[in-house]
Length: 204
Image 1 (cartoon, rainbow, N blue to C red):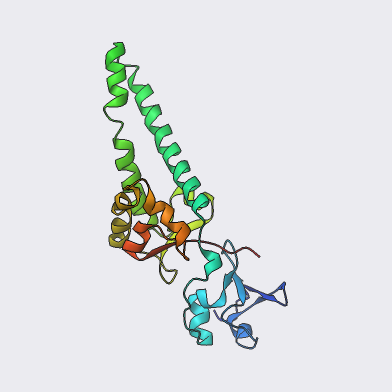
Image 2 (cartoon, rainbow, N blue to C red):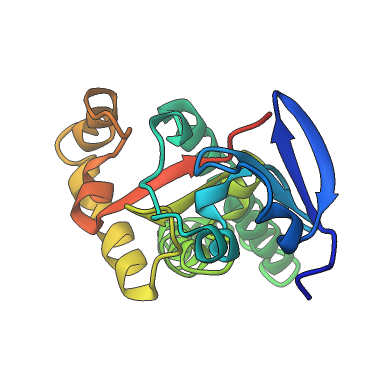
């Protein structure tokens, strides 16, 4: 297994390889060296890859500042998620109109279930951000994801805390979201309450 050549390493600014794990042990790889394993979407620093930490004895370093997702990225991801959920909701309601003739009943059919959009978004966020992808569809499209303070996947419990705490970011006047501009890690209040980060992959 150690002889399979599946790692590309950025050396002096240029990708080189592929190398096997045994080969990597002979190279001067530092924790900040960028490495890409076959199947990975992008390069990661060596300390962020579990088998390299074990092989080379790196201590896992907390996510570097340049990895933190900006507020506009997070906002756009949320808008995308709401748009997708609202689109599905609209399709379901329009389908129901095939069986509802009265105009007032159609209006009620659209408005009464409307709060369910936010409940669905909450539940979706909880499970999606704790999944292996660590992201909703909106976040995935923007290459950002939710992690703990050391860049690892969060549990369902922590994701639940994070998403329920968004009420504190909304009240008062969305200050909890705007607080991310004052925080070095771009954390909103709900990130702080759950000890989470929203990070992005660093591109080469």
